[in-house]
Length: 535
Image (cartoon, rainbow, N blue to C red; front, side, top):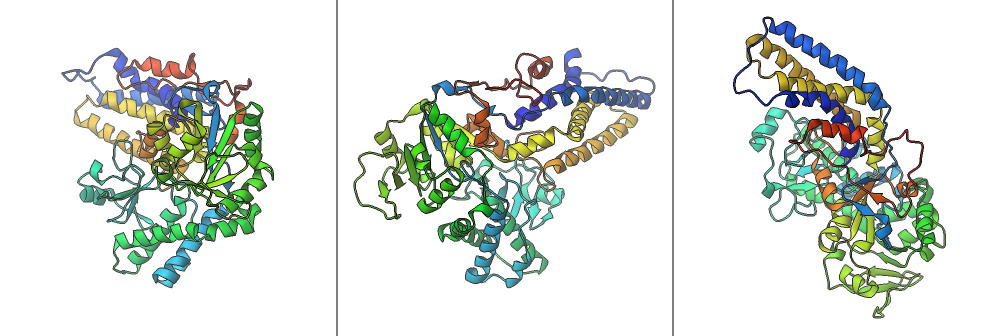
């Protein structure tokens, strides 16, 4: 898990927290209190604070490598014969200008085609507002972060651009749990009675921000509106930016502005080709757009590297619909009517379906590894229905690990975990003086949790964690991706016979010392200071 990064820190800090479990089981009776409980508790507090500070230098000596590949499932690259790729945010990365373009174009479509107030043009795209993986309550017009157990992280619920008070959230949802029947469907959509939509795509960041901005305008100006209509109109406007070619034409017209060249895509593909690996591309993007982008980042001969190229595949339907045949696209982008008996190298094909793809190529099972950035559209069906190995590209991973490597973050997390253990152990003291001190510690813990959230994103925190639990995003990432990394360039750090081993995640009832051993003993996660390269 991305969790892998936090796991070491939490495991080490958790050694202090877990000490209570090693000494004795929970007592049926309250132990006799020391004569002066105030002095006793504050003495234990100072002792814990000192111990947590002493722990920080050893953690600082084991920085995490932002360019490592992390494993959810054991997988050896020696078993992989065929590598498949998505295009957007997998082979190609985009600059910050793209999301501004999408936001502005969709905002203008709302005004020009859906007759929304022209005043919404005053809102600009804020790249620091939303994070991927958030849920949106379509009927209540609320954007929020939900954990792996369907609990809303209080303090991360937004109506428009303003946070909703915890008390109001609890009143609306009769607590903070979202029932299964209200959650998004398998692909994160709000359909068939599901009231929640999950935004899993990197392209969805402008959509979330636009939804929030228009909501904000209506609320601030006391304009009565139907949230369901707003959601649909924004969704349609974002879709039209893609399908009407607005985004594609803008990128093609100024490719250097929008496409980042620094991800070493060519080097990765060349390495695989040199080792005799077969490669294919399946993307929802159109032919001319992909061709121009690949020529820019890989070279004019990019098609020579791929055995099969499929465009406008309409994933995830491509993986499930058996009816649509492939069509060949000629050099001028014209669709041919020939029946396809073989998928030929150097040619580009449109539409089709995975079942026909498997029939024509014979590429089946665990010898295929497919990379994509969308957990649902790219990876879910492949791992569940077809047995392919899957790799998730999570660009946010690199920046989050860099934050987790900072001394301030390590100090905060170490003390937060230690204080949590102290609260857990000392809660047996029920006298008024003790309870007053414990309430003070709880307030400090709450403040530190908010500080921890702000390290990553002031509104929603980390992509991978709520306060303690994994996010719903990470739950799906762990289920549908065998490995995950910040970019394909991470593959350059590994030989193609390397085996990825998932870290043994300590269960709640396992010996606490084992979790500490995960980071200090034989089972190591990829640390930054290690001088010997993995490859």
